[in-house]
Length: 74
Image (cartoon, rainbow, N blue to C red; front, top):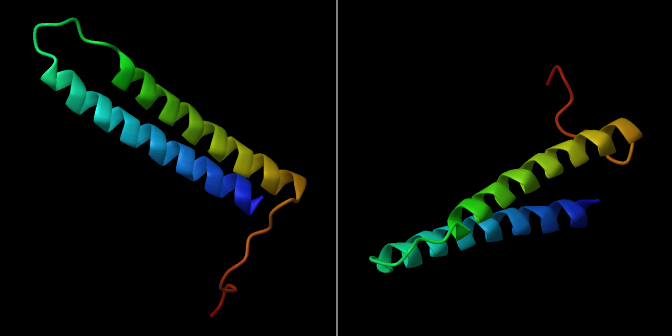
């Protein structure tokens, strides 16, 4: 499960980086019609983030992951 979460985080950061690159390249293309690549990359990032959140909630409900950490009262 940890591997899936790490891969999802990498995909989210990759989509964010791709949106940044698309924004920089689109600024250089003055005079030409702008492409919606940045908007699509950001929409993909949001969709991946929501899917990761729902996947973590589902994994918790099914008992695949359990919370760990400092016990209450310490």
